[in-house]
Length: 226
Image (tube, rainbow, N blue to C red; front, side, top):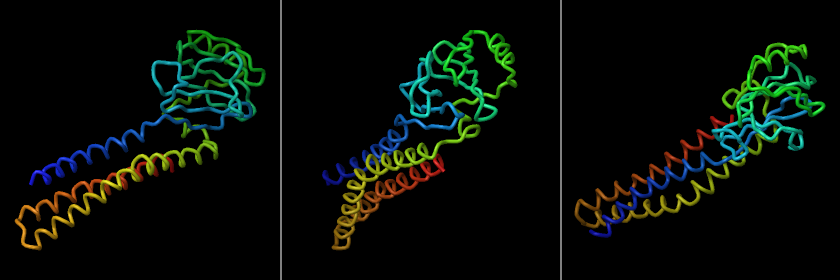
């Protein structure tokens, strides 16, 4: 019966490992890219080592070929939404020091960097720009359009992590516990004690846990990427 107790312990350990595996797959570093205007695109890191502020969630701005912009070494906490694709100006709050930056994307030149938003807004208005609407990491997908390449890459990355770091390795354990359940059931049917019947059901717990985790994590991927 010692071996059976060890198997029960392994079943509980399996449930813990499987939940941790799917959780870790969900926090992998990744980036999404959004069309900003004719001069640049926005990178949303969630989380990302490119973030230069206090958190690992930020926005980055770069040329369409992912080349950095001259004079900008910081990520952004928020950026103004361009009124149209041809508008070269933006105002944004830098992650590293919370300063406000007014920038010309066409010339790749800093117009103003200042810690006070009012000063930056005055400069912004002097460029004949309307008061800005800001995009941040929470509302990026609502105010900007994600590029097709980014959507395709995100789907592939999430499904890769889901299958190779969750489904594939843990399916081996699920099969092992399914076979253990069948073996216990056969021993009970052959005249063994009721304990074998109970064990046959206990061994199914991690199997159903595996099915639940794989299906629910796949559904979360669909919800997050649809």
